Length: 322
Image (tube, rainbow, N blue to C red; front, side, top):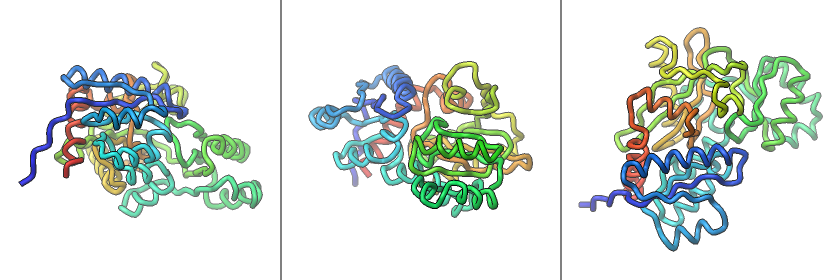
């Protein structure tokens, strides 16, 4: 017989960090902290720095919630340290986080699980330079002619992402992607409806929230369109028929499971004209700001946001005791 784990009372929310997405993380962290506090939890909001680990060891919280975006929160390093320290935390394990963070690897894993994902190639900066940019791009164009999308192989919030229609745009897009990461991903561009599907698991298995349709007014769902109010129209639930919504949900859950994610994730898809959902990428810590698709999906599902956050904190404690 095992002891019933004590419920989470004291939560440390981590927000900020040093990534390009610091400001978004601070907003996400504040919303999570407010939601937890509204449901009776004692919350401390910390910005990771050299004092963080000693502080966590000296005054161990019941659970840590890392609302950190970008490399500082989504490359698996911090989560590995929390595991070494024996501290429960909300979110996917360090190993699963590393898989999802690396877009080419994530695409390979979900494709092996039977999930459609656009044809693509990953190119290192060194290969691009040493083999000759023009020679490399000539080979790429033969297999992946424009229109394509070019993005850093690691990163979030659409930073460094370009939609490419011409050869000149492709060259510039590669240079931009390499300013964010040493590996660039060139991906077939699927035309269709872009949706984000949030997934939560508070202990009874992963559950998909209603798909949120994304309609950027500029036509490109870039950083500004994501986080500046009025730049994008969101529809929650998405304006897709019931059968297509069901297929999208199946694909999102299959991707979540294939990558071994837990507690919370967001799966980004594009649905083509035939109604086929294509996997683009997964986020282990989706944005939780007032304009985020995850918050909109929770509301569309009729959930109290703070209650869900509190339940996820409890799930993290239970999982750590197993």
